[in-house]
Image 1 (cartoon, rainbow, N blue to C red):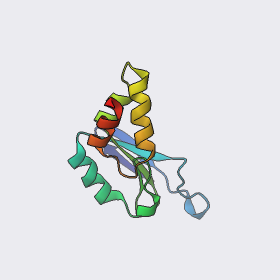
Image 2: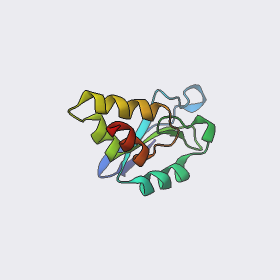
Image 3: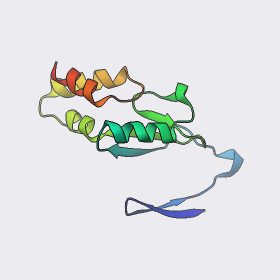
Image 4: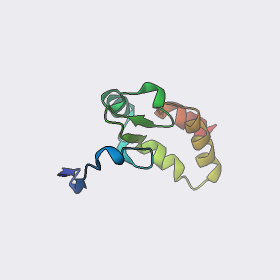
Length: 108
């Protein structure tokens, strides 16, 4: 067992042994400020590039991460449901999220 703090929030992790391994049923989400931070975290965390999809990556331990630009979160909260729908549709076609492409699709 390990206790850690990330972004001021306490976490406890427990090793479930060989019977309980990581699956996509659990993931950690990181909201990024911009494309540069998004790309940096993809490069740092993604150990299985073929598993990348819609902003998700899998690290060297098999843990899934969602790397989500804050601008995408804002688009998904747009008062116009058509904007959110276009952003979501664009995201579904991406592996690594592209902030400019998401914005362009949302405003199309």
